[in-house]
Image (tube, rainbow, N blue to C red):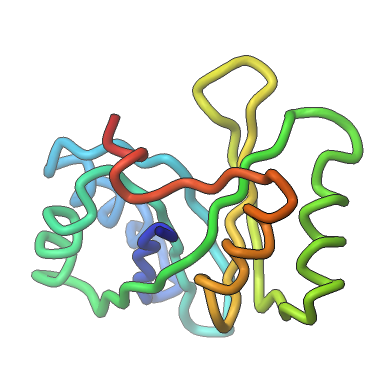
Length: 141
């Protein structure tokens, strides 16, 4: 399953973010989640969008874009909800490279996006604990 994250390399200067978001918007896709990490002269914009293929093709016109399979684990939007996810992965020796979160469409629904070495194994571990995950298809609903 897993979901596809698009990562764009942006110069760390005014106008870069608004132009990238404008390019995504021009495709008609929705941005479900977004994270920006700074690295000296550039930033890495990581985003989860609907219609990933269409957005990726548009962004490739102007940006260096990479596709990465990540796990989006469902959790309740409440105190302590992240802990069982991290505990399950830790007990199975699944290393988390980075993560960020976003709220879901339902009340009290949230997701944590996890970049791990083996998304399939991470999803198996989570599913065994009754923790749901998103797929690209479910993002487009």
